[in-house]
Image 1: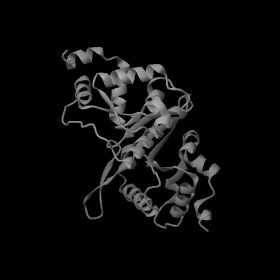
Image 2: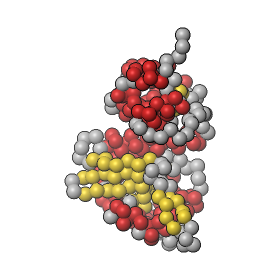
Image 3: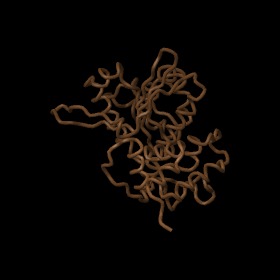
Amino acid sequence: MNPPSMIDINERLSERDWQILVTVRAFKYLTTRQLSRQHFSLDNPQGAIPRIANHSLARLRGLGLLSNLDRRIGGVRAGSGGHVWQITDLAYRLLCLHLHEPTNKRVRAMEPSTTFLDHTLAIAEVVLTLQEATRDGSVKLTRIQLEPTCWRNYLGNGGETRWLKPDLNAVTKSGDFEDHWSLEVDRATEPPGRIIRKCIEYIDYRRTGKEQSAEGLFPAVVWIVPNENRRDQLLRRIASETLIDQRLFEVITLYELRSLVLLGHSEFKSQNRTPLAEKSS
C-alpha cells in the first residue's frame, strides 16, 4: 500500500490537529501532559492523561506528522504523559502550506541534549502556568512572544548591533492596566555571574529607549528559578550589584508566577519581598 499523499493527509486533519502541530512547532518539544493541558482540557496538571489525547497524538505520529523522543520525562513510570513530541519535516511543510507561509527550511527530527530539552520544556511550563493563571478572566493574557520573536536588537556603545534574547515576553491586562514581562527561565546550570551579565544587558537595552518608544514602557524582567535556594542566591547577588536597578528585576519560583501576574510587579514585590538592599546587608 502506498503511503498517503500530502493532499490525503491534509484532508484528514481536524482543526485541533492543526492547532497541535502549530503548538509543537512553536515550542520545539512538548510532553503529552503539556499538550493535554493545552488542547485536551486537562485541568489538573498531575491528573490522568485523557484517552483522546493519547489517541490523537498516536494518530498524528501514524500519519508521519509527529515523532516522539526515545527518552521520557520522568522515566517509564511517567507513562504516556512523559512522551516528548516534535514535529516532522512533513508536518512543517504541511503547516507552511496550510498557513500560507514560505517553506524555507527543512526540519530534522533529532534527540536534543538533556540540558536543552529541560530548558525548552521549562519555558513551555511557564507559558502553561500563565495561561492557567489567567483562565478565570480576572487578568487577561493578551500577548505571548516566544523566541526568536521576543528577541530585540539594539546598537551597542561602539555602534555595533547587539541582541537581547529573553526566553519569552508576555503582556497581561487587568482592567485598564497592562503589565509587560520579559521572562527568563533559569535551571541553575549557569553560575550567578552569567545571570548578572544578562541583567546588565537588559540595563543597556533600556538605556537605548527603543522598547519604551515602541511599547510605552519597559517590561519587568522576571527570572524563574527551580527552587528557593537558587531564588535567594540570585536575589542576594542582584542586590550586591551597583550597576543594576533592582526595581527592574524579580526572581521567583514557578509556583510564585501566578501571584506575580495576578498582583502585578510592584504589588508583588511590596507584599512578598524584603527590599533587596536589606537582604544583602
